[in-house]
Length: 85
Image 1 (cartoon, rainbow, N blue to C red):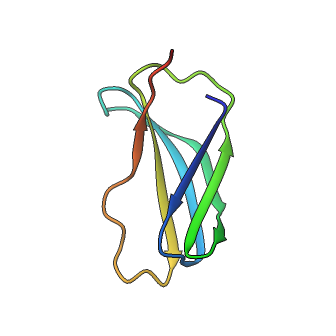
Image 2: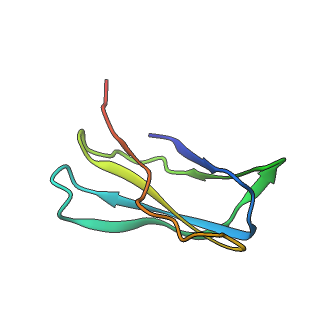
């Protein structure tokens, strides 16, 4: 995996995000990339990280977001399951 991009709507003031790596059984997790400021384009916030490391099949890369001005706290954490070719 070379990079990860995550997006969310609507735009929030001082939005930040970080990446978490979880194993295939969802038991073990660690921070893959620390909290960082996001960019925005219109009503969409986004953040791209350079990863450049092997992530085992079945493991999950998850993004967690935080920002000012959200009407409701985020529920859940968006994840992708890695499938190598």
